[in-house]
Image: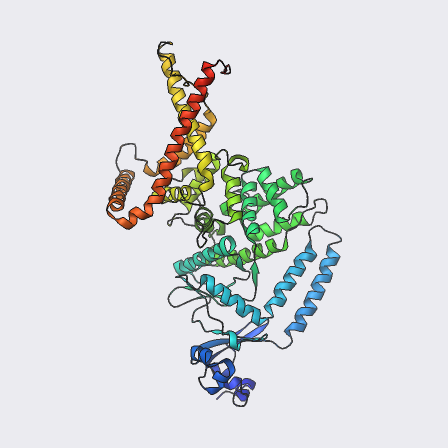
Length: 559
């Protein structure tokens, strides 16, 4: 028989420990840098009721739990480590740029926060409230009444630690990526340490998160500002990139923007292995590139501490993904969830202000809500197809060759008729009216030319044509039309797909007409579409009547 452990000898005599029935001969089942984990069952009885009350005793009595106990001298060791790290950061700051003292302080707050198990229990409950009801995510319940600063008691979760190979490994990465993206874009409660030791695959195939010591709250404005910065750099939009560099705290003023933005774009390209594709971005390499810019004392550039936390977390997740499949690309895999949260944010009654500001800035010219940025809208639709269920983040694809499916069109129409996309209604009406007037004017000009001036346009007709805008709108229309594209010979898979889509559409219309609930659901969208059509018609009439009046008064400008 095994020699009795110190804990085993204490269980019989200690009134607190005697409330637990320990497994594994009272020996540790898992060990980490600051604590050790034991598996136990909470005994029912008067002692438990006296300790936590009858209601909590009825809830927890008989349950199997994980008990994490902090190592005795860990607080003193952490204090010494942080003292040395901070002194080193202060010394290094004399020779290099970047606010590394602030980064050291942020790390220190994370570290000492991890030492407080009461805080971890609260983090666990908050995370459980947000993600415990997801179908494929498991979050244990913290036994708050039995948790203390150096001891945390938590529901025991059965499961296997990674790395997981093959399809099941990819599925675990997908779930973890979807959860992390949701944290970054929607809730802001960000798990800063998603390594393999903190994640389990349950027997049912769900992903279990079991450690909540290192968490971070990312403000809404910073979350969407980070997306705006990446898009600005990728699209070579200097104004958008500068705006978000200032907002996020990378820069204090605009005096060095002309030098910094090219450096950042080069850093992003290097972090993609030279391809320049966002889908190939390596977060570990991005961290190296940003640090290289920070070290330069010439540029007054610094990486905000919370950005360091985000990149560190994504780097850990990236390493986890690459251990499953060396070809997996985190950004590529995140496409579905980023797009869905941008266009149709879940769990919110009202569109977050920061998200609304970002979308207005991205999808209208100069963020003025007057003209639609059709080029970006087309890019978003192409990206949307990469968000389809069949999209494989382990394989590359060429953007220009991506066709658009029915699901993409549904997402686009849902966005355009939702509260989130409401800001596009006014510029969309204006530009559709201008486009209709322009196309009518093109027809009138052709008719005038072919008839050699015999057939004259009606008053207000034959107006100016904005060919550039028409081309941009046509590009978006072509992307949507590709969903119904047919083979040149009119046969094959594409033809069958088109017939299937037509059949689905007809069935959907019949269901809406015959089903009261569906009619009620579709009514707001149909009303919105009717409203847009009416507004476009009115504006076309206004454009033509205004031009006719000016012509009659002799105020028409020479063209």
